[in-house]
Image (cartoon, rainbow, N blue to C red; front, side, top):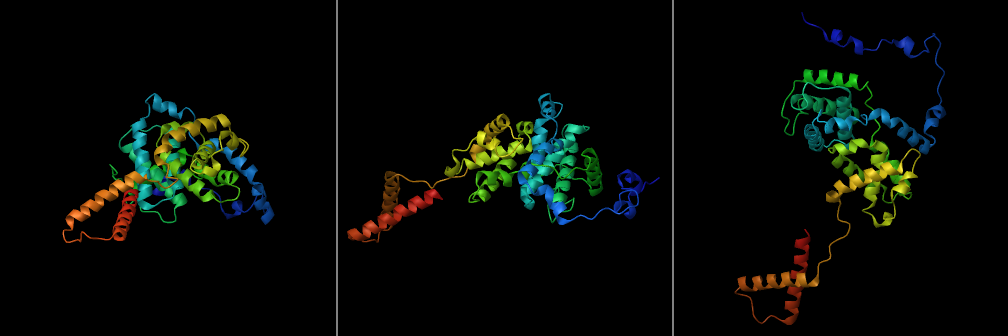
Length: 336
């Protein structure tokens, strides 16, 4: 006997009608809301950010989640592989960094609350596809089809209806709380605290976002909450700017109520460990004169030996000009 879709998901449907939605339950109309009522909770930005810090615990897996990897009840290698695939698809389609982070956030919160038949293999792949699909629907204006989403070396290809069933399971386990609090919720605020003039704010946010994405594969960062990760990555980004070399975790603690210096220090040290390879060049290279002269001399000799028709009676001015041009070419080629 076939079962209709409405029978399968009847418990997911809302029972309200238009009368109850626009009334307070007793048949009376709700009071009108003015624009001042809507904007008042966000009038004080500091208070709003403090509220996010207070609520962020509801959007992260529990602190004992990392113990599951240490006890091998969950495979850290399998998680790493799943997150790596999510990041590949994010780059393939040019998704926002927040989309990839949300997908991993759903992935971790699900595994914390619900066990899968296997700790690796196709169940984790199916979960990865479902979480990325949900995150893309939350943040992206254009979302690939479920079949098109399974790219970048996906080991298993699932039918759309299979992925949709997994999406409903993820939604139920997460209690439909997809609008999560993430480190990206704090970056703009923390950057403005550090750079009140806004001169380097865009760089700080971009660099911190890059560091966050590069670290979400590391299970060690699951020990820290989003606000702490945001503060640590902004500090790490500031290290690339001489103007903010004096900033430390003690300064970051004062950015908002609820931040803890010891947590920021621990996360900052962990970020520094993995961020060294990603640090961009801050200053152009200055090549020693001896090195340039050596390359120039070699280049000049090669040119002279290969051009048998060149005149041996070149003027001193012409020789110096050629030597200077060769020196410039050597430095530019080496730099590129």
